[in-house]
Image 1 (cartoon, rainbow, N blue to C red):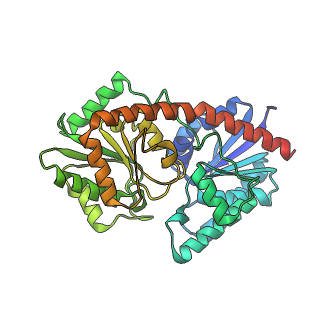
Image 2: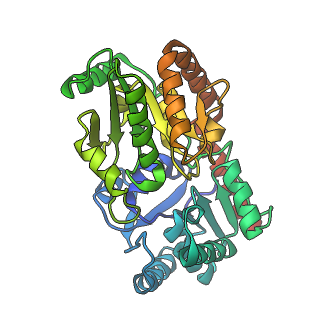
Image 3: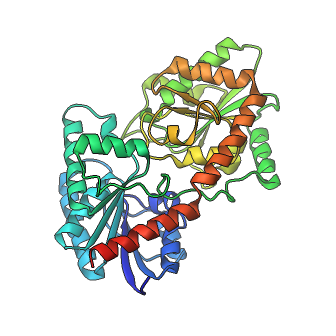
Length: 390
């Protein structure tokens, strides 16, 4: 790779750059790229700068905000004209729409967009039509589209008729892969997990179900709380806890009032909020549950699998490519509280068998989704993209 290939990476919020793409921008710097990151402002911007990753703030929003979006588009065009990148690579819907439009207008030769989930999958009416059109524009402006799961690739092909030559999944899936060494059980992490259980007065013989992610409706929190109550009612002689790790978002996709009340008032429901290091919180649980309605390729499922925690996931894109219902975990239909409750009861009934599945899940993730494999695959895409558009 020649020196000083200019690479512009754009996400809507800076948290995507520091968490979802952790380590990736530094890797491309080490490969001879001159990297510039762009996103809205936030505390994570300082983290990027401490990692010696140049960053520019553009006020991108996650909502439908036409006036602000036009202003952001103009600013992105200014950034591109100043930086003169050879590659613009976007993530997240709003950054994809505006970033790809700006890159197309500025005639950037290599324009790549990663799809890690599609909000329109759960939208209806006029909102769905607008989201469909925004994705259509994004895909049209891009020279390459990277769905991060096989199911997502099929959905894009069917819904927008994107040329197969433009669609390509990086490696075996995922936007960033997983650091399997970082996400592995160690004595220090196990001790930290014990301390969390002790702090929250969780008995040693209690069963803890955990969830990690945004606390919103389309992550299946309503079904999770309903299934949790179902398990409690079925096993009154056992003690169960529900551990929710992640930010509560009350504006974009709020929980139903009764679910909101439950997670704030139930004595066995623990709201941990956002955590920079989720490993000890995951290890403080006995079962990881991820009943999301839609995903691209969820990092948290790979993380739980690598930590050898038995996993119950929805039968959706990404989740069903990480977990196999026969060998490595449990897969349930999305939005099905009863099926979720039944799976939770099955894990409780034969926990030693669940742990065997969890060990197999780690082996599978380590083999197919290591971070090094994803990064090298993306590097190859960059190199080929530059050659095609030279």
